[in-house]
Image (cartoon, rainbow, N blue to C red; front, side, top):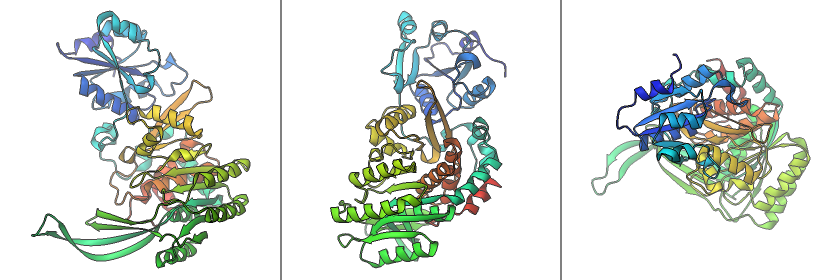
Length: 490
């Protein structure tokens, strides 16, 4: 399709329409852009997007034709043209009612202000409304289910990754030694047959027909690590109960070296999910979330420091049940950094409130968007702004943000202070069977990939494949190397 001019664009705008103008590099159209485009159509009738030419900036990584196609394929964009003049001149020529930018630009001097003031236009800023439905994403992604590599050809090409590169990296992960520190959980699934509605009150009535238990939390993270790597150790706590004994028995069968101390002050955390026809109806959590006592914390710290010389990566799997105290985390991070160990962490904030900022100076943080927004205390700023702030607060090297059905987004700082790169891996399983455990699989596999020598782009992709495999089945069964390799052969 030939490039359009501003004159062409103006001729297609219906008289009386309110016009919004957005401009950018658009190396990849990620969820932050999608939210900006959607907001533009909420406040205006006609969205015009200007794409910078190839010579505009050294941060432009893709040919103009690819970037134009990425923007054109979006359902909210009405017109696209190549910016062949200055932004100020384009605004004067087009005379949009609104110029829309991301909220990360709100505190800066913006060159759009003067030309807008000259005729009465306005500059607005939009941030990050959480969540987009799958139908709101690029047309090219609709209907995708199985073929991971075909679906992500653009991502792989942008980062010069071949399928063989991925296979070799996954094989390299077999030599990684992992230590997992965090909360041990037992997940119980009760499958039910729906009976109907109660005649006495508006209650759904079900009848249990089958039950199965899995080791979850930090336990399944360690199990993934053992099945994907050379060996894995787990430092955690359990209650003096049958659930704790079950966890130890299962971890031993998998081959995890379990340093799991008994804490008589709490039961083993137990989560029960009642499900019917592949849908979760109710989850009941039996837990205590008070901090562990100082004596137990010192004992765990001693165990960790004993194991640390024999590992390549440490993964903090925090479900906010009191094990990972600030003092313990600080001491482990300090010891790990002295040994140049890859450090990775996440603090879950789904049914409880965690704080991912406790993991400072680490190699990898993998928060959900909700967890990241809680950490920076901002529910309005865009994804780029969240990433920048979270890296500033934690001094973490890599902060991919997981977005559920939107995939994984990364704002990656460049070599120069003023350079950065944004990209995302789209969700690789559009029909998940059970989404619990997706974040655990992504966290540990991405961390292990980094420990095996991969860059963040390759590690994030392999982590996404691992996550897609995990959500394709019920319960926390450990992933194997063969599981992930099999998907790369589809």
